[in-house]
Image 1: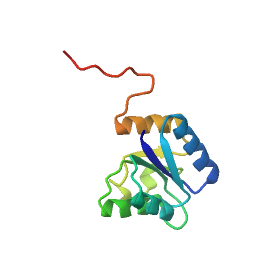
Image 2: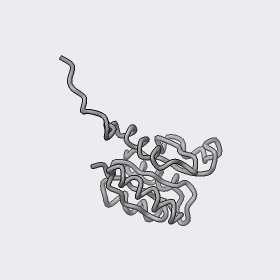
Image 3: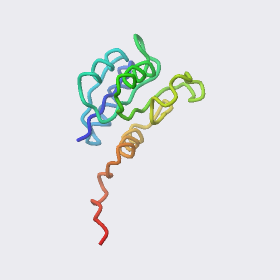
Length: 130
């Protein structure tokens, strides 16, 4: 089971994303701001991170930057209502996928699945070619 860290300062969005990802079979841990997300990411193993951009204490880009500087290579999705072309230039290369808010939670779960190279729940296991 893949472990996902969800970092979001809006309590309702955090709850919705966490529940949706758990419903799709992911183990989810969450943090309400970038500083808490950074602490969790440093102390736990995650297969992917989903983070809001604008948050109190530390934004998502700063959190990802700190993790990358420390050598963490965990795939990341940044979610925000800000258009991608208006994100800070120093954020380039820190995340694997941008998702505009509001986003569909099923699309989020499917994007994580694809990003991690996991089979869809209804797909039969692949068989090796003979």
